[in-house]
Length: 178
Image 1: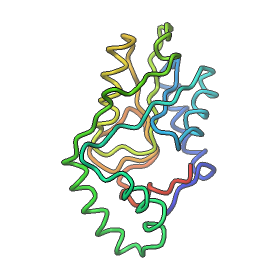
Image 2: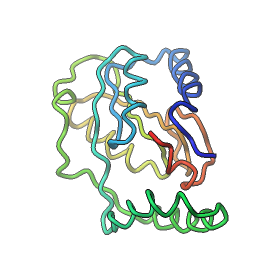
Image 3: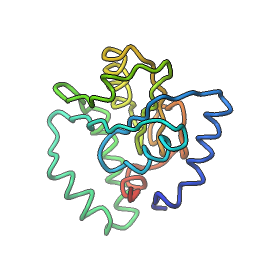
């Protein structure tokens, strides 16, 4: 099943209502990467706060141009049995990868953030949690603020504070279309 932003809006609303029932307050939404702006906007509108974009992490020793070609051109046309094998290999490689946000600029809104509410970190997928943990640490060091995490899908063992779907394969969330 491929996900679309329109197709997950009900699930996003459920996650938002869960946050409200947990008495969760959010003063800023920060989404990771440039393709999931609609998710960041959704939560910013729901909480009535600003939204910023955070840079994706850099994977050390990863062939980024090759991955872009795979994600946009090759994965969409492969049959599911082949994708399952690739997915298994991808997970093993990903687990070993080192990620970094060193030398990544920080949005001015984040540097000036002074509300007494946590920052909601939003990503489309979480596997190892490395991206969330790197940004969590950087935000804490930069602003002194706590963070809350949300991911549409969970494909590994790391569990964000809030999510929509668990147990997905990387190839299933890759083309969310947002």
